[in-house]
Length: 122
Image (cartoon, rainbow, N blue to C red):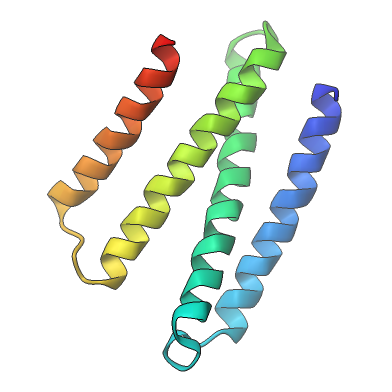
């Protein structure tokens, strides 16, 4: 698969995920639908943020790296987009349980950074 094909697929799937997130926010009542409504929200939020962060990080890499090693940038951008989405979903979940305080947010962010550093060291 070429980078262009991957990016078009990522754009399409991101637009579908953002549409699904909008539909979930508009039509699902978390008090009425319970755990299923919350799960739909978190899954659609995860995929939306993963796609948006991946496309944005790839754009930044391509802009500042002068198009060197484009294939390597795609994988790194996707991994980092997933880590950003996971961190945001964890922060949202902590907030929904009223457990989010600033040091918990800091621990989640530091944890995501440590995972990324572990991947970069390999």
